[in-house]
Length: 397
Image 1 (tube, rainbow, N blue to C red):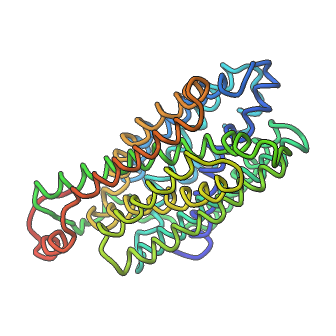
Image 2 (image 1 turned 90 degrees about the vertical axis):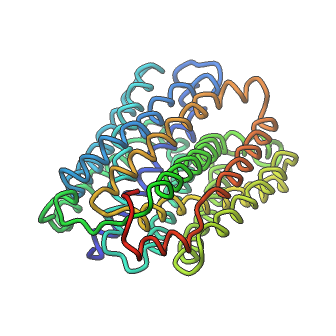
């Protein structure tokens, strides 16, 4: 993949996560503008975006394999930009919910299409996934930083318009720079990756289950951290711009985790590495649930490092054990299931915090992290899977 298209694919990942978190960062200003009593009452209106981010991944992945990944990335850039501008024009919570749902449909394209396109011919796929993850997480940090400043400067609507215009510009540059595909991935000669049927289904089940727990932790933290930060630092920091900078700092530090994990995945077995990251997740969430002030802030950095550090594992499984001709479809299915469940968690975020508070929520996230660690123990032995792959007999995963 040439340098400029690769850069745009990584930038697309940053934009994908940035768009999905503008609402969560600006929700207090949006609630005030719409005359809603509190931010908790606005959070259910974002559930459509996260549901579509999951469920729309299946048709997006299918079209990426059968129609072409280049074409789908163009739909992504232009669709995200235009739908973000549409969000900025809404006047009621219901209109906001509908516009965010449309935004979620276009946002679903990136992961099953952009990542397989990026790693198609990568010599070090783990490192490529790590760089891509770093870009995505910097997009999360930028969402916290840029949204805070744009809301303070010109209001929440401009916080959607500016990145929307950036996405449209990226679409034009990608159309000019990205090489045309000779054939869609599904039409190319298959270089089959095969595993025995029972190993294939066991691996896929672990992949989906761990992706689900990882997505729940990712969505709850990234959507709740802005309000959690304001609560836990209340009396210490109250300025929205400073809070945005502190939150961006959390994400900027944590984003480096994917780069480190991606490099390690090219050198070490996946299973013990994955289990170790999830074990540290449990500790970090446990500490964060019982602290406040600056101690909580450093605990938040720790748990976000581990949340981000867990993300490259499922993408690496797809690259290692699934043929390129069907990677977008498998990724789309995995994302649809995992984000379908985690979108429910996002829907419940506001009501749960309103009733039980953030402390109980953090305890619940500690339990989710523990469940993920247990699931990883069922991942088949990597040495045996590699032996099966070299043997060339079995069934598609």
